[in-house]
Length: 314
Ligand code: BTN
Image (tube, rainbow, N blue to C red; front, side):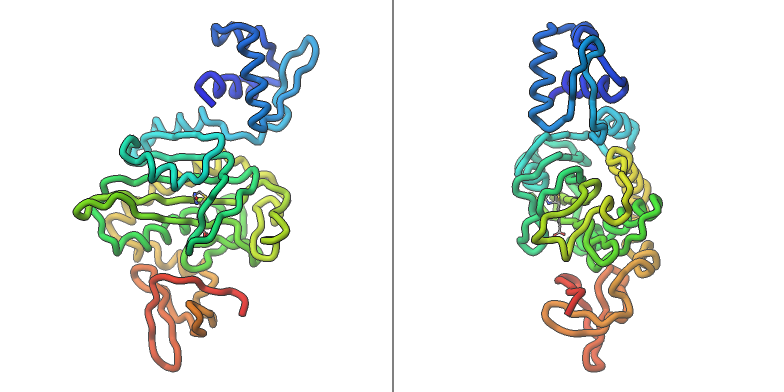
């Protein structure tokens, strides 16, 4: 999709009907060229119908309004670029492969992911009408220690935004967002291109938003915001709200670390105070540490865990 397609989508979104002639004259291209573009937009999945004498109509308005996100990015003090891709194997992989040419604080979004990746080498099932995006933070002097907390921080930001929308979401350590006992959002953070301590971190975010359901094989463990709330969410607003909350709070994370957010994290963490099964061992989750680690108790001994998978049902 290029700038002209985005312009056509914007006109379709903002008008009930718009004629091919009008679009052609706005863009200074032929009527035939408009036809061709409408055809390829339809092939991408946009539901566009044409009515005699009235023109084109965008029937399903649940689209990403790229122009609004770009406006936000322009006004942002952190984010520099928004790249919209119709389809890609994985936004994390795309960012990893193209990072030399990408600016710091670029956001890459895709509508369809053919090989989405999850944590622990799992795959991330592509669910329509969701959010699949990656944030590239470049040339940060890391501090490997900060990577895990940064991922927890991102989960907390998403949980906070969802709660502002009235969603009763919780965080499953380390950074899965749960709703009514099932996962609606996962985050995959990856380090890349480390040279003498300088490198990038890619934060991949997957949220199941407006799909009516998830595939049968993950129905017991995953869900969508729509399924649980019977509401449609404005995905464009959701993306902008997440990015702006991330931007607003990042200085606090930089200055004070995860501990600044620890109380809020604990109050929404599903595992805190519960018996859990982590990395195959049964323990009691006593606390969430200063850097977001799980502080567990097993046979009277305190054990700190900074990575792994908590099993909810055992
Ligand atoms: C998990 O819970 O296992 C993490 C899932 C992360 C999925 C997102 S979708 C956008 C980005 N690209 C990927 O391939 N994965 C992340």
